Amino acid sequence: MKVHSDGNVRDRKTSGAQFSIPPGAKMLDSVQLAELERSFRAWASDSPREDVRLSRKRILFIFLLIRYTGAKLHEILDLRLEDIDFQKRKIRLGGDRPGESRSLEISDDFAAELRTFLGGGAGTREPAMFRIDPGHVRRKFYERAEDCGLPRDFGNPSALRRSRSVELLRGNLPLPVVQKLLGHSTPNLTAALLEVSEEDMHHAVRQHLDRESKRRTSARNFFFGKIIEIIKGDIQSEVVLHSLGGLRIASIITNTSLRRMRLKVGTFVTAEIKAPWVHLAGREGVEQVSAENRLQGVVRGINAGRVNAEVVMRLMDGTEICAVITSAGLGRLGLRKGSEVWALFGAYAVILNVE
Image (cartoon, rainbow, N blue to C red; front, side):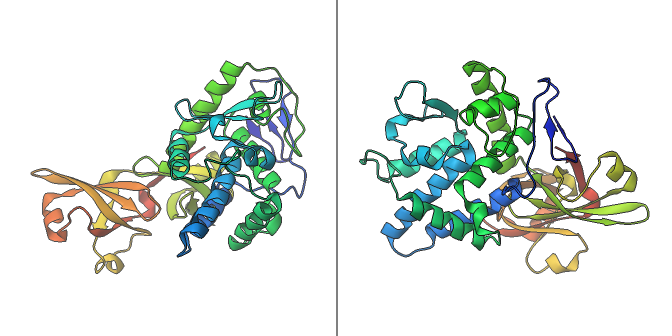
């Protein structure tokens, strides 16, 4: 799929299939959606009263369901417990009405999180688990958008639905699959409609969700995000990435690579750092090094050998990063499971790949 300067995306596999994003359309990219999700999660747990936290979590999960399925607000508010198949990780929207219901995939992690929440008594005895006044839900969505520094309208459920559809298309999910996923409707997008089977749709969506889930849980030493700054030099350039977890990662590449990869502000890339290039430091020594990237975390595990040791740490956003250091260095740092530690690596150690 190619994204053109006019805002059109053309799928090479489906002749004539394309969509256009109207100028001024309210839409969030993947990093903005991640920021909005963090705001919802922090808000949902920020109350000393259990009943308030439960009420907020119901709105959080309404947001998550729209954000990851592209469903309409009223479809989520009408959702019943029997509409969720946790074993197959599927949600049925539209109830039992013939010709109106459709089945949507959800990721393994989200299915587990949703099951835990509903298992805690979150309104499971009600006819509809999320039966909340839609006006109240919209107000809370607007508040979270403003909390992220976004215009309040960007928190509108229809804007989230539109954002999800474009996110899926830009993730190379075929256009007919996205259209079927959204109920043969993509607001503010014009597209050619092609036929796709239920089996093909679920297979394509499952592959995409697995890939997306890996980005969010992040394989070790792997970050996915958006370029927010490029500082161009005579021979090399510094490229700054804002990850889905809110981390800032700096990389230095040649200007030739910058042109060849067609990198610019707003491009989504992955950043990879090899374990031997990651150095570790305690709180006292972190300011004494020149590494451009300094990430705080906690030691999750240590695999020590006679010569060297593998140290796995979990960063503040939940991402794991692995460092290989000498056994002598491990002894000097006095690291053990649960120790606070900083991962340090230079901008030259970060390898960028275009998504």
